[in-house]
Image (tube, rainbow, N blue to C red; front, side, top):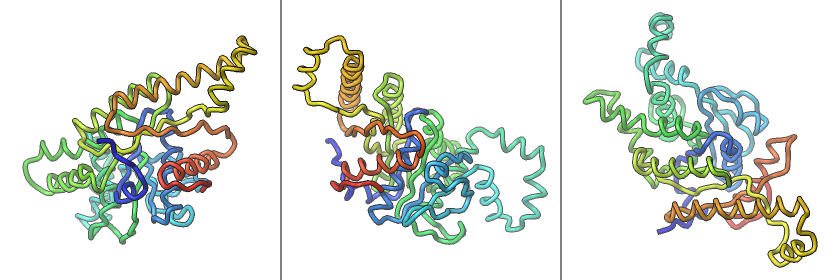
Amino acid sequence: MVDDWKSTSLFKRKLWIVTGKGGVGKTTLTAALGLFAASQGFRTLVVETHGLTHLGEILEKGRVGYEPARVRENLYLVQLTAEQAFEEYVLQQVKLKVIYNTVFNNRYVRHFIDAAPGLHELLTIGKIWSLVSSPPGFGPKKNFDLVIVDAPATGHGLSLLTVARVVADAVRIGPLKSKAEEILQLLQNSSLTMTWLATLPEEMPVNEALEMAEKLESEAKVQLGPVLMNSVWPKLVSDEALKELSKKAPNLVALQVYKKRQSQNQYYLDKLQTSLPASVCYELPLVYQTHRPLEIAQALCGRLRELFSGKKGRA
């Protein structure tokens, strides 16, 4: 059964995770989704991981740090690092920062922590869980309607979504296992969490998208939501007009390029829909704008609004 992704079903979820191959415009799409959700009246938090600042630049907010900062009406941004998440978690346990500084800022202990496999991903997804669930002891309640995560590119993004299951399976008892199971309950609950899978009409991005879709189901067990094909060349003329132009100027280079790009768009769209029969792939246009990334995100937000709420206009 193919999901009918309309706003009524999209906004029932509390957590959206945006993933895809690096270079497909994933972060810009995350910004566009945040603008879209905020424009629909939902108090939205957009999360950037690994200490990156790209979303801040796109949304023209700059570096905002570990605490959510207001970008515009209904839209907030936070930039997470595993180091800050680790400090926050330890201080919840030991209470005194002097103990944390003495023990965990020791360079030998720090080297051990930095080298521990999967720890950064576990700390990051744990913090995301707390932003969605707002449990007691995790700071003041933020009461966001929706949290949108700009996840790392496909390989690292999958690690972020599977690390809790690895820990839950490996640890037999104790608070670490309990926390991992709580995270899993959120991630694997399709009524609360879903992914947006971003790609381009090109060979490698589509192949990685298909591989990621399979692993989301088989390994992460996280709901696959809409698939977004970004940077699709617009259809400028009708099929009839294109045939007429081809007869009159068959050797025109611009016309040949246009026809090849249209054919490429359709080929990879068909490939996605054939390989993912239970999913819907939506086309987002190539936006000709280089000076202000925010304008690209706003244009894509307008397209998302048309696709999912039936309304036109920019953010």
